[in-house]
Amino acid sequence: MDTFAGFHRSHRCGELRAEQAGETVSVCGWVQRQRDLGGLQFIDLRDRSGILQLAFDDGTARDIFEKATGVRSEFVLAVTGVLRERDAKNPELPTGDVELQVTELRILSRAETPPFEITRDTATNEALRLRYRYLDLRRPNLQENLMLRHRVNKVTRDYFDSQGFLEIETPILIKSTPEGARDYLVPSRQHKGSFYALPQSPQLYKQLTMVAGLDRYFQMARSFRDEDQRGNRQPEFTQVDMEMSFVDMEDILKIVEGYMSCIFSEILGLELELPLSRITFDEAMRRYGSDKPDTRYGLEITDYSDLLKECEFGVFSSAIAEGGSVRGILAKDAVKTLSRKEIDRLVEFVKGIGGKGIAWARLTEDGASSSFGKFLSEAEMDVLLARAGAETGDVLLLISGADNTEVLSQLGFLRTEVAGKLNLIPDNQWDLLWITEFPFFEYDRETEQYLPMHHAFTAPMDEYLDVLETDRASVKAKAYDLVLNGDEMASGSIRITDPALQSRIFDLLGLTQEESREKFGFLLEAFKYGAPPHGGLGMGLDRLMMQLTGSENIRDVIAFPKLKDASEPMTNCPGPVASEQLDELGIQLSE
Image (cartoon, rainbow, N blue to C red; front, side, top):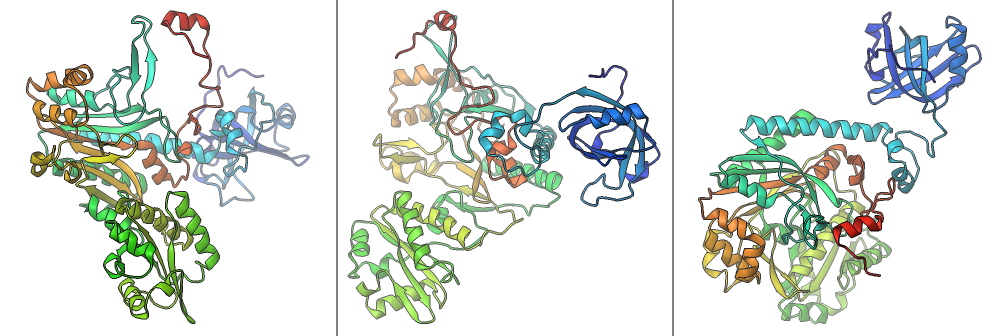
């Protein structure tokens, strides 16, 4: 192999254009492909900026021509030559008007045949690509995602700096405190039997920066949660994290809207209309069955309980009698798509998310057919369809149950599923909105207790302070989420700064005074020395990148992601450690 010594790269491959023809340039990169046409050879050289065609012809020195003959895909080259216009231009490439007539060729590294083809749209299964992630990352689309992520990071830092925020790094090794998900624990060698935790968020430390008088904090914060993975989650992730003093909710929402406006303008070239839309949690659930609704399409939920409470269909009437409801969505012009067979699939879909099924009515030109019509009088059916606004060609889908929360949630999932089947979700449209007035508590059936919907440091709305102990289900929080195209982008709240109120919340969560002091004594202590009113928010950078790049998988916007089981096949992580390391930590593994 040739040495790189003395070589100087003048340009990246994708930077060269026709107006530079005649210049002597030097480039480096990986071979995308090599074409040998006898007395003429071409090599497509690739780096992160793009592809440049290299030409070897009768004007090329013989030794260089012969060296090019031995070049194969993924060889690493350093090349010098004269840029010239191509005879056969390629309009699909930014560099398609030019090629480099090579005068110097160095083979810096040879490559074995890779386990899959390095192309933008490779059909290779993801498991193999993640096993060779360093090769997968050579693909242009993944490189473009990571370069865009770099730009987003820079815009983020520039924006928050312009708004008077300080970038402050908070610890990675912290005290384990309950925040909803399981902590990743790190054993201490110097304090045997004690453990650090990796932060699920910088929550407590960023609040302490406010107590410290630093006023405005932000961080590109690495966070960790030991929980079962889903399509838009990873065990380690990045938050755009911020906190502000002497503010109320309006101040924080304005700052975040300015940030999103900056991102959309700088990254997508789009201007957001501000202020963003807002709806309350209760309204979001009532209309869309979700606290992160996609409002780019309709399919809003309607309540039919008052019409059906005395009907002879026991599935409906018994659910209503038990305090539940009958609600549904109307799919317009859907009879062709939502055939009986397709509705059966939707029934199974609802059963798969914990429901009992769907009641339906299809309005064809031959009249209405339904799964429940024989139990309703003609007048009852007419009133039902009239409230739905149903017309010929429409399909009405109903879900009933004794638990209104479950009915709404199931309809929320069904709404999204139906929208996908009917192609109702528009491309290249951005739906940003705030969800406000979240419940402070949510009831956990497994533990049979009320838990914070956000976290224990969120402030309740002032008008509910008198009923914290007596009517937890009614209490609303000074909490807010930012939703983008049906995906939660950010979550935040105004924080509790009164030690007495914070102690009340800990008490409601079942923590004794001793447990509160053990877990959060440092925070309660800090509040005694003058805590300013403050609040903040954490935005999932990985999820934001999914939206900005149009990626369907969060792993496509992270350089070295984990699988659903939190493993990383490239390095076989996690893995066993030597017994000597365990001995140093005072740890003995159980069988």
